[in-house]
Length: 126
Image 1: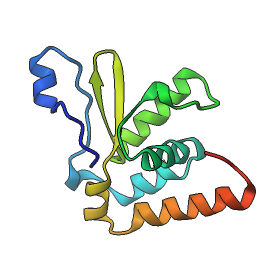
Image 2 (image 1 turned 60 degrees about the horizontal axis):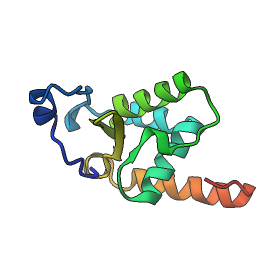
Image 3 (image 1 turned 180 degrees about the vertical axis):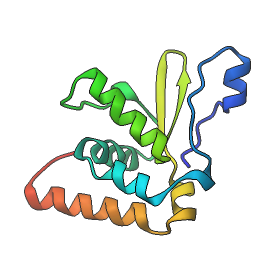
Image 4 (image 1 turned 60 degrees about the vertical axis):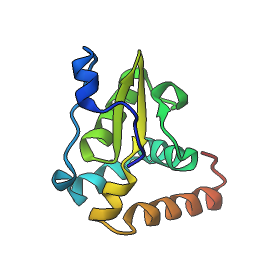
């Protein structure tokens, strides 16, 4: 998991908003594959992987409405691919790489490699 510095308990104690995330043992391969099957969600995951750090939702320039973007981030969070935490008014996103690797060794890297090869093959930038 990309470390997000403010643990959920601290955010709750401080009166901040806390988002629900599945525990590691609740993450299902079907949900992960479903989430990664959408081009916009895969784009978000590719950008997070390339950044190798957490990014706010506003960093992503997706060609969809704000409500659709919110939906995509919710699917990624609920599937266990990303962890989201509020920092002030920004919702920060980090890949749960460690969790995914522990549960499904090599899956995330294989999907990212395939997506990057495809992007180069069809001349698509991130």
